[in-house]
Amino acid sequence: TLSVNPDLLRTVAAAFDIEIRGKGGASGLSYEVALGQILEHLAQGHSQPVPQTAPQPPQDDGAISAIKDQARTLAWLTGRMEALEQQVEKLQQERDEALHQVQQSGDSAQVEQLQQENHRLRQERDEADRKLQAFRQLLLGNGMQQEQQPVEEKPAQQLEPAIDDPSTLPPVDASEPPKPARKRIPEEDALGHIRRAVQAIINLNDQEGRAFDHKWYISFPVVQSLLRAYGLSANQKHVAAVFEEMKEDLERHHDKHQMGSRHNRKHPHIEKIKELVNLN
Image (cartoon, rainbow, N blue to C red; front, side, top):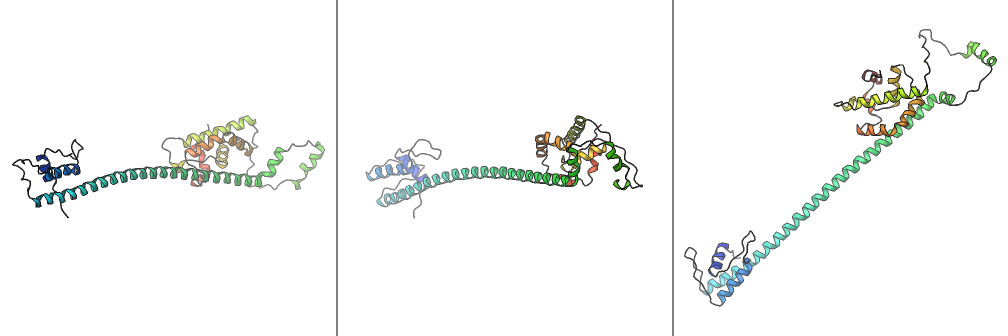
């Protein structure tokens, strides 16, 4: 194995007026082409004086043979270096493309994961709403059916025995004070109160700096508890109508604050909503 001294090669090339290309890509010949021309000059017996600052090139056959061996070695090394440079450049390009693809696939995977989580939360919310509606229908279904069905007017003679018969009346607890009869209000006014309560809770959640655990998911119990705290009608049918009317706005609001139907578990005392929202 022979080693080649680039400085010696440049010195010999300069003696024959041969310019070798530098690392920066300036004009000149490559190592391999320059060596070929030097060997051709030497084979023809041409020689030129070398500057005194550099060693004189050997003139004997042994020196020529050594330079030829060095030329072949240097040519092999030059070709190998160029191949390695091309391979390095190719690998760098492949690395950059791979990193870009990984980054894109990572972003897509994250977006897909968020979409799946959002879809799952929507399903949980819808399932919870269905269960809640079924539970309410189980508890209040008879009363709601009686409200929706038209009531047939009966003669006063048929009503009087039922009113006068004590056995038909529910038992009365003497320890409880009588509750005042709630005055019926027009349906549009009741709906307006419910809309105002819903908007008030939205404004509460949108307050700047409000912590996530201190926000409220807008549900039937929360809205009805707030309305009853102010002595307003909290009719189930009216609240459901307003929720259906504001369905898209409520979905956007809950998605904005990343709240699911189970969020209000953070508020075990739901009646505290009246301390945070003032409907007056």
